[in-house]
Image (tube, rainbow over all chains, first blue to last red; front, side, top):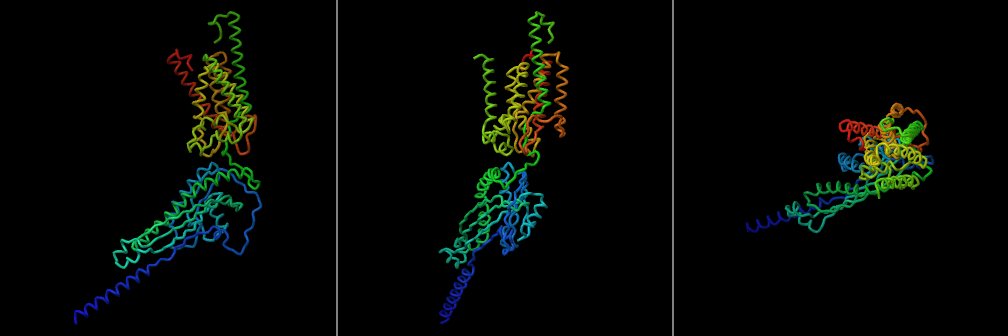
Amino acid sequence: MDERIMKCFFATIAVITIMALSGCASSFGRRDVKQSASIVSYLFPNASETPKMNTGVTYLRPPVRVGLAFVPTAARSSELPEAERIKLLERVRDSFMRAPYIGSIEIIPTAYLRPAGGFADMGQVARMFNVEVMAMVSYDQVQFNDSNALSFLYWTIIGAYVIQGDQYDVRTMLDVSVFDVTSRTLLMRAPGTSQVNGSATLAGYSARARQAQIEGYNKAVDALAPALQTELDRFRERIKTEANFRVEAKPGYRGGGSVDWLSFAVVALVVLGWWAARRRKTDDVISGIPAKAQTP
Amino acid sequence: MQTDQYQRVLAIAALTALVGLAFAPEPTQLALAWERSTIFGGQFWRLWTAHWVHFSMAHALVNIAVFVAACTVAAATLGARFIGWAIFIVSPVISIGLLITSPTLVEYRGLSGLATAMTVAALYGLAYAHRSLRWVIAVLAITLLLKLVAEANGLTFSSHIHSLPEGASVEWRAHLIGALSAIIYALSRSLRIMIRPAHANLP
């Protein structure tokens, strides 16, 4: 009798434990994670106002000073850390630097920009950092989280540390939009996308997912760099032909070796002197003046 | 082919190339011009070819005329081989000098840096070969030097024969580096001749 009661007791404990662990496993069901920063929300925070068309001429003065920043959003704990943002911006900066008409690029920390600050905020930051053009990096990243068939083994407790029963699919899009601060004109834009898939254990899921998010941004920058280079080259051709762009190079941007009248006169006199000296030497030879007596 | 004929053929070929490039389309000129970012990107030929392209026909023809005149005198007094070596060595010296001394310069074209170097070399050669002209040559050399110093300080003694395109300015550093290169050559040659008079006939 006692033995039967003990067996029932332990069976009940086992059932309760299994149910509890199953409950734990199901309570770890993760929601999809989304991070985004929209350039439109930043520049046109008041969606009811229609943006005005810029019909004027955009003046560009190469070499251009460029400010590079991420579009700011309201602070959230899931957003990309500032240190990672700076690293990504440094990589984007390297792509920009290859263009000959870009003089300098200033990386602007996100803290200097106000969420939904609009063109006024952009202008303020541009004046602060003394830049003429702002390159704003907007992003949209979605992380899909699913469990696979192996996740039922989490109830074994050891399975939570060993079995990779959770999967992540991180899709990232980066977009660089370049604006002339004075005329508020969009000069060019270039996108970069990436997709990172993987799986992780229950215990190690958060760390792997965070790494995947950062990897997603890095791969998006890898895709962005050639697209940006193509757009920079295309822009260089566009400004030569489009009437609404006027290029006024800063002093010292283009140099030419040029001759003035004084140099021309000096060279002319050198040639004349040489010709006269040669002719006198020839005359001396013809008239039989000995070589020693000739003026060297 | 004898050496003289060979040198003459080379000179004619070089002059033809120079004049031909003056008529070349803009993409060709751009592919050969001095551009800071592309040189650092590995397109090192621009260190030499930048001096052979110009912004306009007038820019090219005036520079070529002065360059040929200076080369004629320099070749007659210092030897034709000197011209070849001078162009080969001074071209990248000027280009690299611009990379270092003009950090804001993005694009450069023009032969006048080399032309200035040849003018100074011609003055030296003339002074060495025709000692009766030394005082005249000294005056011309001082005039050229004063012009370079004035350019470096933003002053102009006389107007330019042609105008550069909008946004382009005269790059006086190219003239100065060319002149200094020729001065260094002249001093080293004079020193060599002083030590070994037998080297007087060598370039």
